[in-house]
Image (tube, rainbow, N blue to C red; front, side, top):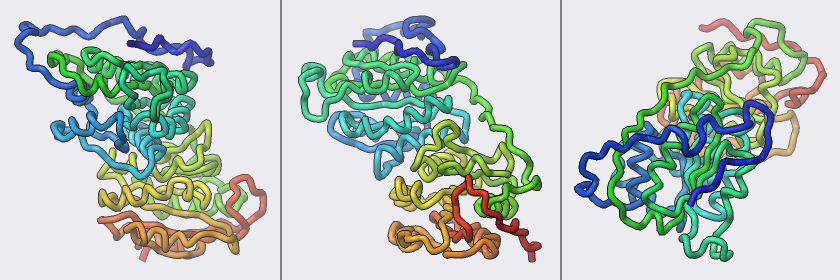
Length: 402
């Protein structure tokens, strides 16, 4: 069963998938198909992911997708990152794709597990991020019966994806997954959903021949941003960001939460953001995905308290995977806030601060000395953290290195 291309009208370049779903089919030059071993549909899924070059999958298991998780044990080339919440899986896959130029992959179960991905899927759509979303679905005989944890996920996501597939035949799984990668990473990149019924993952079919080769990595487009030494916006938070840009240097990647990208004055090549939506909760999991995709790159997440609290639980994911992610939380002076440092330490991370802008450069240096776990730095911003504020505050000048 295949859902037709998404008909919802969208402005270019969102008007149509890059390849019609039935055009340019993959060749299957299997000289002796009757001799091919039988494998499960879940194994077909893993073989397709391997053929597409997927190396990281962010996800969370659940009933309908459990057969795929069993098959992951026999796919050593694919690393699965167990997140704390499906929204984190979606944003992490988006950050991975933005940072690496490759197609990000996330996976979840049916019903509420799948719908928890919708915000990240829509974010990927409006920001042209290549993303393949694998979800479990109730068995074919239960589709349309309001079964436990059933939802028409292709219907839910049709307005915010390049294409959607509902697959109930195990023989079609590999083909649909490879087509999803071609569309997601095509000329007009974006998210593609592959929703697979549980019985299709469990049934056995002849192992398909998979000649597909991943498309070349696309350069990551960077928005035009003025140089670091340009005049800083006349706002407190703008001055703090200028200090951070100088203290971290051009080799660091900065993942900006909320609307902070509007006042960032570092290099455009060193920033990731949810540009069109400024999605709350994007920054931390996106930074995790970026850091895991670029393990040799120093990554700083810069966010405000609200955006941090939306997905801050993914610090646990970073800690368990020993990802040395750096997180800077900017908060108002005197504001009623949570104990961010205590939260970070409770989740297995190091915490520095709170500090003020004058101490930020020194705090950055201390954070860079930690290599085996995430580090959270809390900075109190006199005058407020609203990027649109016009209250004046002198620009902080970073002290000379000792």
